[in-house]
Image (cartoon, rainbow, N blue to C red; front, side):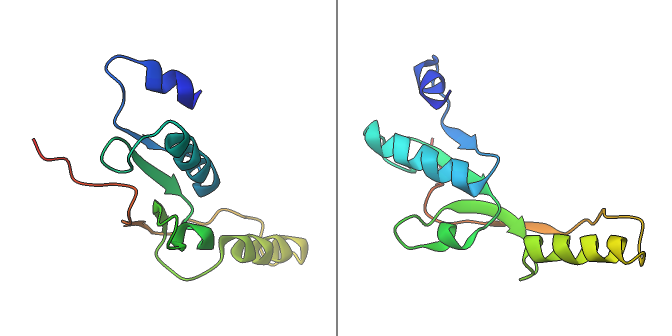
Length: 108
């Protein structure tokens, strides 16, 4: 799908991937295509997983503000439901942008 996006005219200048894992794969495809990130193309992920912070990747991403692990929070909520402490497993967390090296400001 990403390769098809690159064929569009005009070509998109950025993509926001559904997860950091997808964004990292897109970064890899950009490098294979010879694109200069972020000068030719900008990439943003969603998760702020530990790998996105790695110096060789330095992925701009959106993640929760707290240091809590979302998987751990989900397991806690599941246990609450199983132990009948709660009937609801919905939880909303505040998010923020973690700007890194895969996005840049365009100068016109």
